[in-house]
Amino acid sequence: MNESNPYHILEVSPTATQAEIKQAYRRLAKRFHPDTQSATADRDRIVQVNAAYEVLSDPQRRRTYDQKLRRVDRQVKKTTVASPRSRYQRAAAGHDTDEQLKLWLSYVYTPVNRSLNSILSSLDEQIDELAADPFDDELIEDFQSYLEQCRQFLADAQAAFSSVPNPGSIASVAAHLYYCLNHVSDGIEELNWFTLNYDEHYLHTGKELFRMAARLRREAQLALRNLAF
Image 1 (cartoon, rainbow, N blue to C red):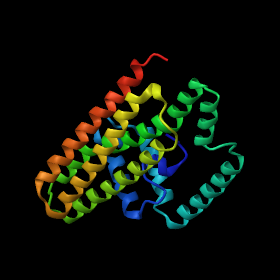
Image 2 (tube, rainbow, N blue to C red; image 1 turned 30 degrees about the vertical axis):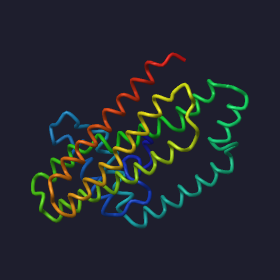
Image 3 (cartoon, helix red, strand yellow; image 1 turned 135 degrees about the horizontal axis):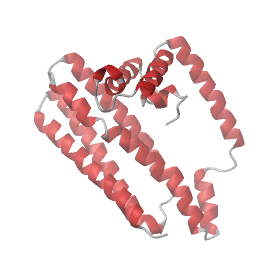
Image 4 (cartoon, one colour; image 1 turned 45 degrees about the horizontal axis):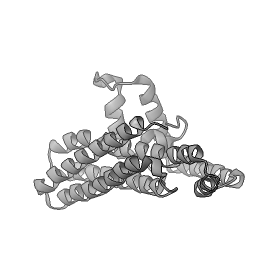
């Protein structure tokens, strides 16, 4: 995690709405606040979360920070020698399989895995909060905000997955990730249908799709560990 980027700390996209930022803050505050006496309580993390929320909840401070991010991004683009795909193509042309794998792990596997973790690790907590009263408008809105964050993380993962080709040596790993992303996408839509008609069939189906996605993610991790390079 980038400890200085408030968007990373709150696990939201830079395009997140104020409602989504508030919902993310509440979720993380419940997870890490020392007063909860839970296994996840973390005094240092809650300090980071509070500081990040102070920046992003203030429109003026957020605009100032966003302007800083854009300046840094422009500078990075100016100094970047080559895009991930062009670097991969050069490695492929030179038959440098080690470099291909290194680039794939850096530009595909790591960001995809990070986005999947952000999606899959928080579903049970969100379901528990919604279970207090599934017909409460505010709880439904919070759950919809959570699903929108999931869509943003999924979009990031899908973009990373297609950023460079998959080396033949890790075909099984890539296949597991591909189907994992598909299950996550279908699960999000099923969960969203629940918020529209309160039919628990969609809630159960969405949870099952997320469970299957989590299994595929673990299988991808296992397949990568079992490969001998």
